[in-house]
Image (tube, rainbow, N blue to C red):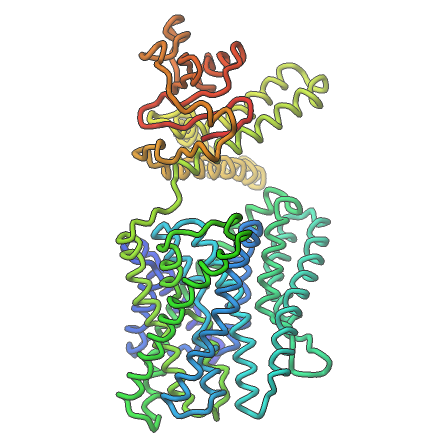
Length: 631
């Protein structure tokens, strides 16, 4: 294939992936499923070029950036908190699945056991992109998504180590000791290389002041970790560190330190770059999976096995892959909790949680890439490739299409948006209070009173804007965003007019336009956050007195309001309010801090009554002034 043909193929593949994913976004189906179906149909269209997914393309070109992009977004704290279920799925389950499928495939295909284990390692790891794409779209509980993401980040390394060991066994005898050594070298070496690469990159990025240079280093990091790990061998043997695991560990550590080592602009650039890379690679990958079907089916025609037998074996392996996971997740979930210390720290979840995790085992591009690592002389290689494809597409379509229905049938609820906004408001308030204390203790006296007041107002406004979103009316923050967006549009029109006249240096105009873009991007984010609030949810269902501070636990009964028609002071003075709060001790009704009078806070400062409750219809959240907690 010439350079022009290669470039044309890439352009066509990426263009189709972006176009189909855009169309899929308007359908009630996750885009990976639509892309695979479109790819299957496209594989039989003559003018669509043949694209072969080679192991090098996937394992070196696609997997490192995809895993790194997912790892830097995965909170290290959440990953560490769920390390037991993640390990039981990403390591133990992969080994169990490899063993079960190994014996089954060996018996059904009359191939050596090593070949069966190789197939088991190929089909064992679920795909990170597929599982989380479906999980996030249908609103699974946040912990379920975290476990699925964590599993998918680690299980590829386990499966690839088992596959390489099986391939070595196909070529000759491999002792159990050698298998253990290779597994330990791969796992421990991958973790060690990932830590070292993360440490070096973090130290370098701490000292980089140019944002573009910083982001460029971020783009190189996944390949730096992967290649370094893959090239380091143990004592002259074939055992080497896992590049996949090195990428994941480096991504988790660097993502965790990102708020410390990067500037705000650098973090913004990095998020945008990796979001774009992930979008293009993820969608192109699923399209390429579907485009393989025509060539895979053609190769199976050369097999000595009948088409019927290949189809039956493929479906049996598919059922075994799904069944093994479902059987495993329940004891893996509940048996560890027979230990009292584990049960106290992590109470057993409802049975619907392991069922959902068990059914969210969609396979993806790693399975198809791994099967092509099998040597050409592997017995029944073309059939093994076909089985891997059936398992990949079968799990994606069967489980991916039915998972939303299962969630609805089980009545599982995803993250509560109102509860998220309560938590967000609490965090913003804590940050604002810390900033205000710093202003009073360190800044006061070094700037004018006017500047100090502006700083106080800015800190308070940001926190107040979050509280406002919990109300039902259009908030002052929303009014400001709407009006400022319209003003910015008019300012941009004027700048474009001036640019057309050519009377001002273009670099100066570009700096002014960039300043408007930054401000408008902030307004767009605020508008997006506003649109995610579901104001129909009754927050009374989310209040848990047992998890609250002492003041919130004691203030559970709502007193009779002294002024049911509104804020007592505002009614007296003829003023207006934004939202209303009621004192849980005496029933005083006051206005929020976004209102001009701030009478609810003033009531606390005057009386010391610690807890207020929202007095807005359909809301029951509480705020403790003393401990700065919500409930």
